[in-house]
Image (cartoon, rainbow, N blue to C red; front, side, top):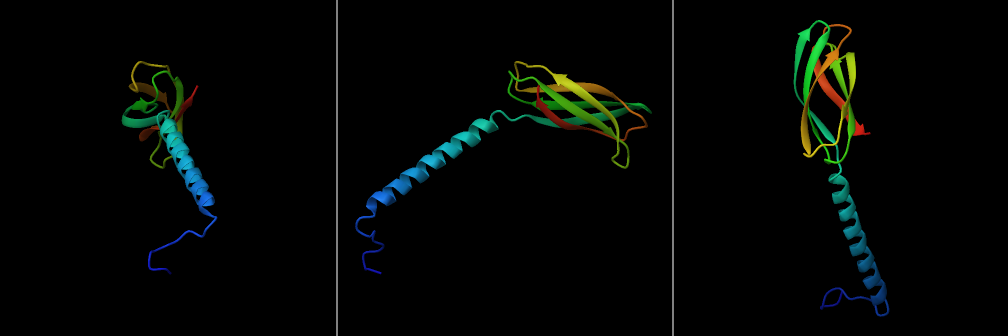
Length: 123
């Protein structure tokens, strides 16, 4: 190795410049893509549940989504062994806020122990 450090072989400078330009362009594109998709994410959080009676569970949850998007959320009631004993599909309309709170009653086949939001998808 020369005393001056790393040297580029003569005649390969244009390939190095092309490689660096391509890498930079790809990094900018990938970053833009990740950030634009993250802004459109749909997320649901269970904030509480209460067993109303042997056949009903009240579930409270928040949905975080782009305001102009309508979604359908699938919510489940589970027994002590985590078996699904009730399911409900909840339509969440477009709203003016990003985060909305919802409360639903889930009818069950047996007594429920817990409630959760399984998923939310675009309508």
